[in-house]
Image (cartoon, rainbow, N blue to C red; front, side, top):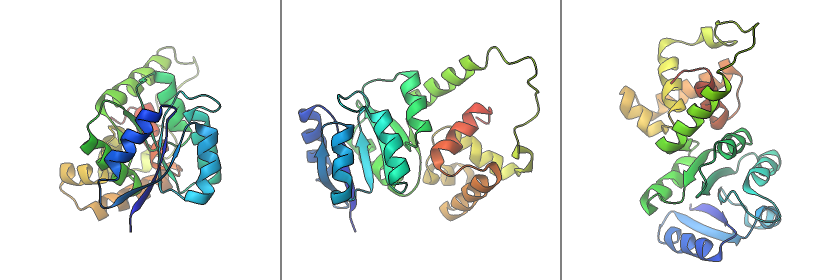
Length: 220
């Protein structure tokens, strides 16, 4: 069964170039091309994509707004933000709206294909330079804490086991389940179990929120 991909970008050359690359893969199929967020929303019902590659800056409706609507209406669809703009606020807003990854367009075709597969399998994707921008942004917003802030751990964090903390740390660095598996010398199935435990204990419902939790609470 092929992974169904919808490409959303306002540049025709980019849309068609990505389609050419992805159609070379036996396990991927591009079901349609959209030129902006509104166009993507109009095509989702008919094409039923598993993964959407989403540009950020587009006319009519941008990628951040479109991602939020998609996750409300089609929570099972995985959205990967693919852009030339590594703007801090766009990154944060896209992740908060439910994007599972944020990639710059200068990445290799092999890494893009790998990212689509990871997203389909429930993993988050964040290039190291993007993770660094997220960390820098959140660190900057925390430089002037409120006077009544405490240094205690966030709610439920004290319930985490040592291994769950290890997994959370690596999720915060944007690692996929397979990468975490290799890093900690445990099976991918075990990684998935730990992540399910983290969802329950930290009361988050997707990978992007777990990633933000890890970064915001300095578990990386």
